[in-house]
Every structure is written in structure tokens, then in C-alpha cells.
Image (cartoon, rainbow, N blue to C red; front, side):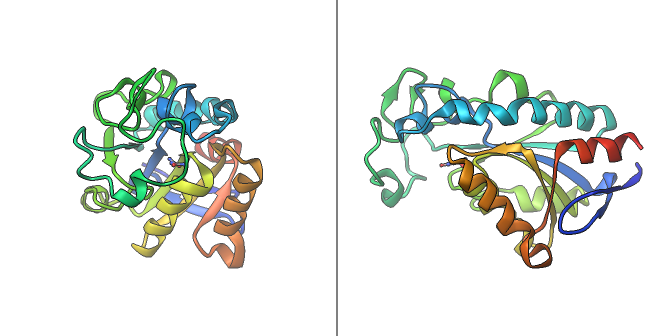
Length: 223
Ligand code: C5J
């Protein structure tokens, strides 16, 4: 596979496509659809739709080229043994994690709400990482799987920008991965947090990574 250079901030980034994975964070019904975890917290879930079409474009390109694709899902075992009380008790949601909702039990593995949205549904051969936390490296086999595949660069997309995307990028950065976050492939319930989340990644010479629009990546892949 080729090497390409993507026009990114704070500087262009050269990536070896054979050593790159496209990581799509938590594009689950629980976050994007009414009746799920995101809505129980009082959020307007329609705001996350903006990321779907850009993500799909990049996913199609990654599949066509043969770039490794990784999907993550935040959620807990049915007995909630992997959900710390501090998470279960947090805030004042309309339904707590584990409670029955219109898409099954909130944020529980195997329930309809925990599933990935149709538009971005994994196909055979793609990796699906189930994670109990916000970061995709905490209590998962993601690091070993990426290292085993020779991956050194992550193209990162998903929701929400300032929570699971940022946490994962920070975890990845500390483990030595280069992260290129695709701005329009991420979204937040809080547009200001989306902007700030991206700004924090690329500030200070790219202290956590690089940021680019999906058009810049697709143009580089086409070149
Ligand atoms: C949140 C996530 N926001 N996937 N999870 O609780 O960002």
C-alpha cells in the first residue's frame, strides 16, 4: 500500500496506509438515536447526525483501499460488573445505565441500543472493540491488536468529540500512535465542545495529534 500526505493542522502528516487504521468511535444507536443513553442525559441526539455521511465516505474509501477498520462500542456486561458505581450513579439521567428503555437496556451489550447504526455497520473482517470506559484502550485488547497488525497511525472518527474521541486519542498518543482526527467525522451534543476538543488536539504543535477534514484525507487518498 501507498504512503500519502494529508493536509492537516498543525502541519501536513505523511501516513503509510499499510500501517494505518480507521477507528470509528461509538457510532451506536445509544448515542445517535432517540431513546438511548445520550438522550437520557438530556442531549439533543440529532446533533450527532452531522458526522454520519462524512464517516460513511471515509469508511467506503478505507474499505476500497483495504485500510484496517476498527469500530468501538461503549457499553457494559448485562450484570453491570464492569460498570463502576461512580459511573452508574452519576448525574440525573431519565434512565440509568442498565434500565430498560425503548431500545433495550441502556448502554448494555447485546441490546439494540448498543448496536452500531445501520449506515456504518461493520462488515466481515472489521474489528469491533467493546469497551466499558470512554477510552478505547482501557480494559480492551485494542493496543495488542493494533501492534500485532503493525499499525502506527490512527484515523479517528466518531462521537462524542470531547468525550470518547478525545479520551481515545490521548490514550493512543501516550502509547505512541500518531492520531489524525477527522473533524467533520466527529460530533458532539455541544458544538462548542466539539470545536474545543479539536483545538486541544492540534494545539501546541499537535500535542495530542493532527486534525483535518475528511475532504483533505479523501483528496490525499485519491492522489
Ligand atoms: C459519552 C462517548 N459521551 N462515546 N460517550 O458518554 O462519547
